[in-house]
Image 1 (cartoon, rainbow, N blue to C red):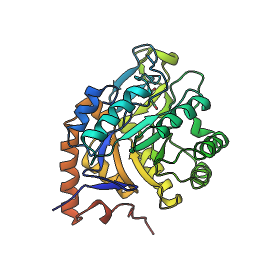
Image 2 (cartoon, rainbow, N blue to C red):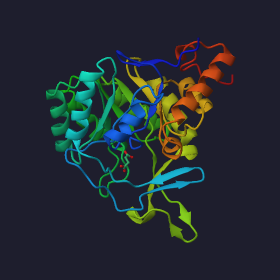
Image 3 (cartoon, protein in one colour):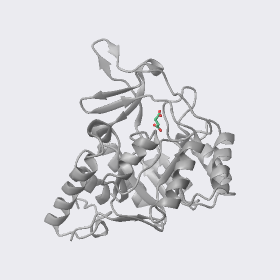
Image 4 (tube, rainbow, N blue to C red):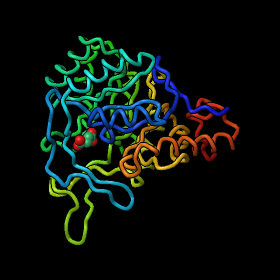
Length: 311
Ligand code: SIN
């Protein structure tokens, strides 16, 4: 029997597929829909300390090869997601979920993480170092010095399982430099990739979203090759204790298969989940299982990271 089960750190997931932060995760209702789907787990919308309305609308647009967004971190605030997760911890203690978060400043990030540390939350935490859409706030993980400093401080008090959500990198030297930073820390995972930041999509003579004069993060088919490159580059460079979550351009079982082949231990779906709804998890799982069965793979460990090169 083919299994798409996987593991991050000590946590087992019945299915390797889940949502990407930002999609189907703003409210309890959306998170419940993912929880009751074929997905193995969910990640919450990235929480700031206080609730945020985000950028003005229209701020998300489906386009033929994916999506463009400049949401600006709208969310219900940390307490909302933390309370919900603590409830789930009581009612379904055998399951593990991901809490995504980031502050609007380093101080706010520490305040949030210290709250999580002080709580009884025992799931995974994803620190979002890659939101491209808050005006005046650069994507943290493009600044290696700031990232190293932030993680040094974080790991001086934070002892729960923590990973980071990364922007795409585009240069081999940047893969090397980023990996050298992440390898210094007891990270549980890195998630590659967030949207490709600050694209422009035109309708006739006009931009397609309102914030930032139309500049927004690209998702969907546009980004799969970049996502796969980042997954594999970090798979090659990170110490084995740091696992990879693959995100970007997953529409089919073949796309999920490719992320796993490049080294991903979990695979997130964003744009296509938004387009198709939570039924996508059943479809992509069935497609992935069919590919595995055809190739004689029983588990994802039979092919994870085993990308073939041309001699
Ligand atoms: C947003 O809310 O702007 C998207 C979140 C992200 O890209 O990290």
